[in-house]
Image (tube, rainbow, N blue to C red; front, side, top):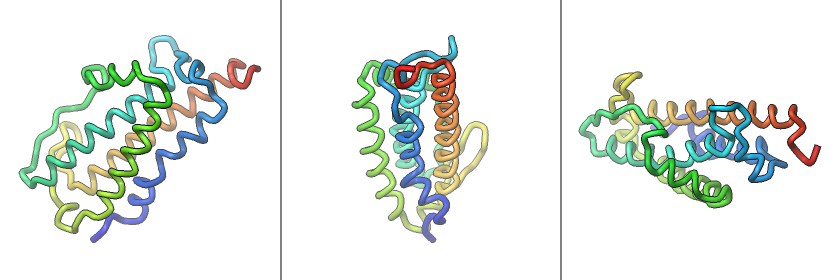
Amino acid sequence: MHLPSHISTRLQYQHKNLVDIIDGLTEEQVRFQVVPGKWSIFQQIVHLQTYQHTFIGRVKEILKGHGPVFERYTAETDPQFHENCAKSFREVMQDMITTRKEMANEMLHFSEPDFLKKGLHPIFGDLTLQQWINFFLLHEGHHLFAILKLSGELKKKGMVNGE
């Protein structure tokens, strides 16, 4: 059993939609807080980039086969999230793309028994590794959609391409 194609394809390529979504935006625009009190596009991206590293750590724990129990992840309590918010947009994007390529390449070669190992999610319960990967991708898709909406708001406000 390998990952089904609908999961493996998203694992390899879903994050690349980000490039199309933010095309034409400057770093200043990406960092602009479109909705006061809510994350900017940049903070959304940093969250995705930072959570990839957290997810890799969780996958390693699941692969040990001891059924780990995970706390709910929140970016606000993750020091790495705050550190990464201080980095340049280019640094964050480079890390996200490089890490994702390495992560996908490794996960695509896991064995059938690996995908059946479980870890306990605090809300969704006992999930197999395959279900964890799907959860990761759905979470990422949610944030990509949020970034698309923020990008649209910037365009409506005439803040893109010197409008």
